[in-house]
Image (cartoon, rainbow over all chains, first blue to last red; front, top):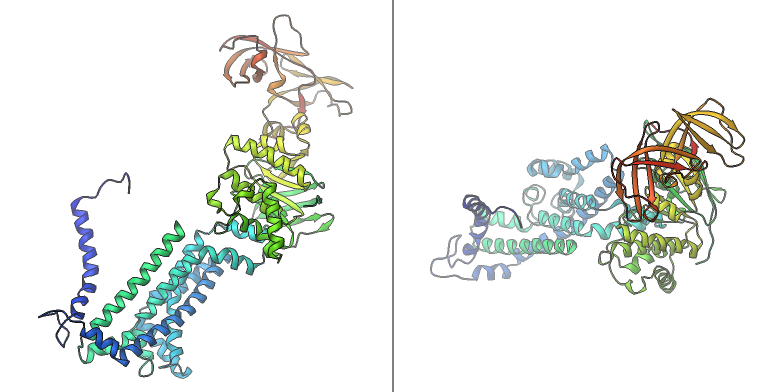
Amino acid sequence: MDGIHPTGPAARGLAWATALYLVLPILIIVPVALTDQRYLSLPQDGISFQHFRTVFASPEWLGSIWQSFIIAVCATVLSVVAGTLCAIGCWRISRRATDLVRVLMLLPLIIPSIVYAIGLYRYFGPLGLLDRFAGVVIAHGVTGIPYVVITVSTALAAFDPRLEQAARGMGASLSQTLRWVILPRIAPGIFSGAIFAFIHSWDELVMVLFIASRDVFTLPRRIWDGINENLDPAMAAVAVLLVLFTTLLLMADRALRRRSEG
Amino acid sequence: MSAAGHALALRGLTKRYGDFTAVDDVSLEVAQGEFLTLLGPSGSGKTTILMAVAGFVAPSAGSILLDGREITPLPPEKRNFGMVFQGYALFPHMTVAENVAFPLRVRGLSRADRDTKVRAALDLVQLGTFADRLPKQLSGGQQQRVALARALVFDPNLLLLDEPLSALDKKLRAELQEELKALHRRVGRTFINVTHDQEEALSLSDRIAILNHGKLIQSGAPGTLYEAPRTRFVADFLGKSNFLEGTVQGADADGFVLAAGPDRLRVRLPAGSAVPAEGSRRLLSLRPEKISLLSDGEAADNTVDGRILAWSYLGAGFALRVATPSLGEIRAVLPAWQAAIAPAEGLPVRLGWSADAAVPVEDDAP
């Protein structure tokens, strides 16, 4: 930021207020998770880790965490493969039609997920995918594609097209060029997209409410049910774990980007 | 690396983009082992021709032949041509050795064979000790040499160079010109170079093809093009030139006299060249360095009086702009050691040149 005029106190105050406004609602769950009471509240006589113990001793909570994790991993694979291929295809063909395809790929971000969920419910019924592991993976995988398309397209925009020409000119086939030149160059973009797609699936609730009921019971779904039914502080403990995990993923993303830039 | 050059021929090569014709009916032969430079201003179609030869641009009409065999429909990866791109296009995520090994890797060579060839290629460009560096850790000149090694390591049929020296500063450019020329002699391959730098073209090439607006204007050895430009564009683009216009008078087998206003300019033509018709308008190209400054009483085939309009010191010489009453402004370049005068604005001077210094050219310049 050398040579830029320093910001005034008003601008700085506004920036801090905005940051706090974003972070405070997340931070409030930390004391709630450490409460010594038996209902959702702030700690009164001291802090306690009993609710974390409850979570790690409960087969329901652990089952949901595991299920959410596996679904998120599978959905991420689906999003990454489809999104990367789509972005590369659009980049290579690069006509007006491909701009349209790119916009089309962003639809899951634009359309409210509840609308999407209703649509999926109608289709998944006859296909026998309701309350199925595969159904949730497909739903999450497809709606995760936009994140990958965006990050990979950004990475490709910075890719020097002469590198591809150079590879082809030296005799590399299309698949060799893709494997040895294009993919290594856009790998940071793919990883970024994968992390966002994973987070998207990991905390997705609305679609799961519609297309899953008993057999597939993801972590956000269990938190939702917990809030509706018994206000157990264990939920706050789970939420803290979720936030920690997501933060770790985002930090991994940052580290990756810094490495690829440096 | 075996010395096995290949011959290339372009037959009526044309490339249109919508209404715009980038390359217009270009026919050109490149002999085995020749160093050919495509020279032209930007937009002259020289890069499009190179890209068509490489296979990245599909011609709208015409054909490309390698040793008489049609290669127009082949994709770039099937042509086996080495190419050095503008900006080099080295793979930034690979080391120097991996970059040079790339064309061998796609051909499925064993690791041992690859290593041997990569080492030989890096030695050829004197970069043997840089094998494990990344491209961004090298200077511009070193990157350029890696690009050369990478383009030559797989015994390509042709080496194509797209403005290979344009990204370098002037001194380094001169050094690498020497190296490129020496490399061409060592490997004995056919090189096709694209540039807009006339000095580079003159010093490197066996032959130059000059292009303008997508058309081939003239091709030939650098000396031929410089001494006997066919058109005004060639004379003006390759070096600097004065242009004198007049009417042909008194033509004979030896040459003719050009009447430009009150001046009568004697032009001697090389034996065997066509003598222009009596009374026709002709344009002469006269190189500034072929003009000398005459002292009192000194004679020359052609002389003209004028006054120095402006002058600049070039180190090795002086560049003068001389205003003449009948021929307009004339530029002259004089070696400093020969200048009998101290140039000054307004100084009256007499310029002279020999009868074979000026050559008639076609007027194609807009």
